[in-house]
Amino acid sequence: MRVSVVVPNFNKERTLHDCLSAVYAQTPPPAEVIVVDDASTDRSLRIAAGFPCTVVAFAANRGVSAARNAGAARATGDVLFFVDSDIALAPGALAAAVRALETYPDCGVVQGIYDLRPLYDDGPVEAYKTLFEHYWRRRATGVTTSTMFALTAVPKAVFDLVGGFDERLRDAEDVEFGTRLPRRYEIRVSDQIVGRHDDVDRLWPYLSELFRRAVTYADAVVAARWQRPVVGTDAEERLPHPVDVGSVVGMGATGLAVAGLPLVVVSPWLGLLPAALLTAAVVADRELLAFALRHRGPGFLLYATWLRSMTHLTEFVGMGLGVCAALLRRLRADRSRPASLVSRR
Image 1 (tube, one colour):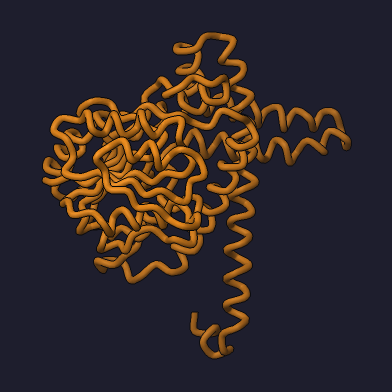
Image 2 (cartoon, rainbow, N blue to C red; image 1 turned 90 degrees about the horizontal axis):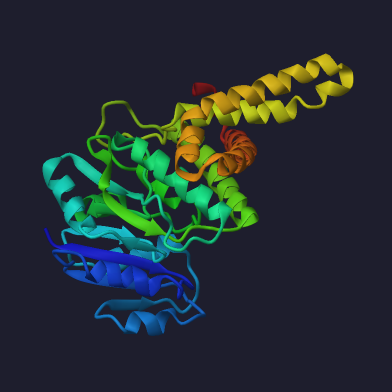
């Protein structure tokens, strides 16, 4: 299989050289490398010019969906391997992706995992984020239900069939892609495809990203359930189900605990309910927290427990708003239909 590597980039001068160096160090090397620069204002274009890659430069910023689509459109390989410009692939990552696609003919998407170590260690937020991403991606090894495109291979024919990424989306576009993948194709995670990621290292950008993705994710789930075609047809959409029950329980328990805090005003005894819910959230996350303890020690465990609660609360609010947005859109759509059509539903 000929592999075309597509690297979307926006202002990643810090990591782009490491990313491309790792791509060209792969054995066997890719058939071609396409860097799509999304109107960067830093030294990204000069860095890309130092490698024998094809560079597609946007005049205006269009988002990662458009960048990936543009790279796929220029690609001539049988397999598209998407890698973000802040990731340095481990040796053998491309070969592992090809092996997975050859071993599992029904596989339409094979995605890798993050290394436990970040590309650059920039503090506790990044340490937590990298540890968490490594933990849950490795746990998802094998067949999964959700697509993430930070380091992912797709046969070009499958990508064209799905229709690429929705260019209206700048967050959760990779998850949305998976909702349109026909069910006859498997989604797989391989722990043989590994990359070191330079992740977000500040709290507010991290929580903001989580919030936006949660809103989009919840909206996509609700919309997909309404628009689901007839069961059994090849066009049936795949729903993006959560893959970690502990995360769902932790998120719900944390959100309900915070919502129940005003009960303390009614009676101090009612404060036991939020306390019990927070305890349940910690218990639900016990395996992740134990993993943090083993790899980072007791001090980091306390920090990870606090940040995990913050992420749960952020996702709880974001998903709630996403569901509300989808319901409101549905209500408006029903009101705009003739009464005879609405009554038949």
